[in-house]
Length: 324
Image 1 (tube, rainbow, N blue to C red):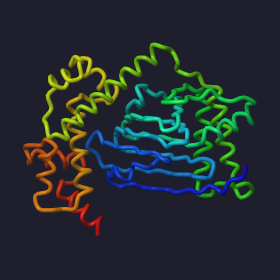
Image 2 (cartoon, rainbow, N blue to C red):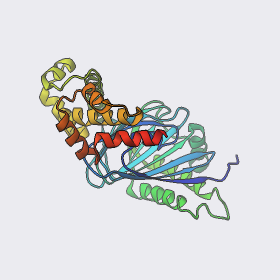
Image 3 (cartoon, helix red, strand yellow):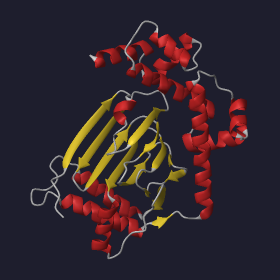
Image 4 (cartoon, helix red, strand yellow):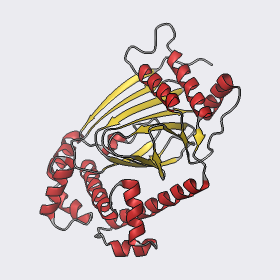
């Protein structure tokens, strides 16, 4: 099988723009929520060929990401948090963790500032062909959801090093422009073959339970925000059938914050998305803020500026300029 020469694209994001970050991984639809006040910047390298796509990113801001990967493609992910632990689909990730997401799998991800990540998207058929070529057997890959693997440190280091080399401006080599691609496929299947799946029942059940609680709570909080309702821990726990202590533990383990803090961060992010999408009109900022449950507008403007580094009206003006 022959493929065209890979193409490298480099993107620098300055300022928080969740709409532009939705498609940082080929074919995915990923909703980003910023988790702390900071100056936001991100670098993303995308290396694409007919056979596979590789995205490698660095975010300097803490982020919560939820969404779905491409249909018809597996996604192989690696993430390394430098400041805080990284959490995905109920599992805490180590420096040598690797995840395989089945086609159209969903992801719920949280990382602290200075997090680095890498995602390889490739068809199941091509990955299994590479496994047969290099290993003489097919891999045991998930048919739905995500499977988390622990790799020997040397395996993941070799794979990340090869990806970094492929994404240099001078790569691929003149002698064989597809050499890096073939090497990445080889190292990927070798790493997966050497990995130990985290399939202990207790860990798997705990991770699924934690993820279920986060999803249910997030959906209920989004409903409250959409209806312009305020936060009540007692009412939230009653609606979910959970104790306040258990809910606090799940959120602290998964998102590094309380449910109330998540409510506020999500509400501010929803307001920002609305300000970016809608053309500016008199009274628009006030209406959007109140529609999302903010009653004290002075405090709202102050906290919004603290989180995003600009006032709500400045965000609205940028949206107007962008539309023109």
